[in-house]
Image 1 (cartoon, helix red, strand yellow):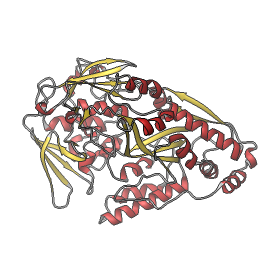
Image 2: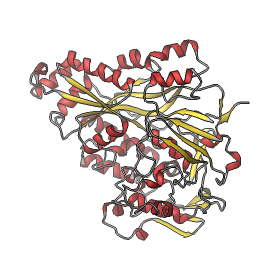
Image 3: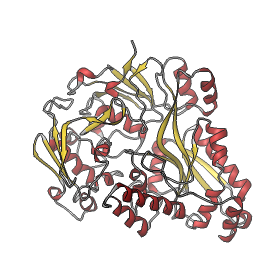
Image 4: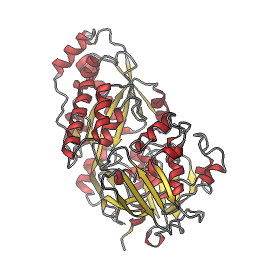
Length: 503
């Protein structure tokens, strides 16, 4: 049995309403999409789809499903299961934050918005049980990577229907142990809220003979000190993170257990543009310029994290040129220009973060910076993960700690966040210029032209600052040397079936 520190308690196990890394780790053990993670880490491997091909114009993709794919109750996995799952994902009643991950498909956005009533008119179809056809509005270079994401997973709608309306967001009975019907390498055995979720080998999985583990325990431990102690005493095989204060000790004394992996993500603060004084870009820029990112990375994080002066992390095919430019004098000038010289008259503002010691330490550092450099008082408030998500989704915050890990390894996975009304926007940011540019990106004639659009989008984010980027992530955690098959991955996604223990 592999014992995994999984951060906080998952908000839900319905893959169509969850948005966090915590939830995706579990979902990827219980469900499998058209393709899955490569055992070597980055890249794709066949999942439910054994093969696929695309048309010459790359607008039509045809996936051929393997005949031995089974749900955990023994039912065959058929192409219609994918089509029905996508209908549910796009139904307005589910209000899926990630519905936009399917919007590149013909008719998907219109169906989600209620402008198209007949789902059969979308680009999803199943000519037969073993064939899934997806028709796109424009070529999507990263489509295969995208289909690894949980928004593209199939669902067993008959088992959901036994617990109520399958198109109701409130229908959660099907996600309980003994009720969850999945098609992944593992099945849900136990959920002890606030403690752990246990999954066991799914003997009906098409590749069950290759699954190396009998079970995985996902432990909900949102206190890094307690998690590290559990690892040190042998109660965990891998941690979600490490306490900031323990990083140096692991670098010095436990390098065989320390992992510092590349991680395609950014840590940032969301700003609620509907809440004065954050509706004033001069205030937002002053706050952004008054953060000493170098000090946070060097003195708090201490594991090679890089200061973020733009939003999108670097990748082999893309390095953003836009930079947040200016110094403390510029920050003070902007704040005075906005009507708050030396911070006088500036209302107290609140920073919300989900409960984790590292978030607290960073928030306290920013609190001190804004007070000493701008005269701005910042109040800190923490909430546990589920409550924090609900608060942010309601827009009941001024500034909120956030992080974003790419859903697929492409800048589009970061820049499509900020479209007007986007499911994961949550800032109130709306720019016609931004929306039109983003909407044109995938229709550009080549990769160079597409990347040029992303350069413009990053520049707009630096100009408008709906968010304050702080640093680019590294994955810093502890891993037992006994664990085998744990391949590095810039998205930190796991092919759970390939993980085991060294002899």
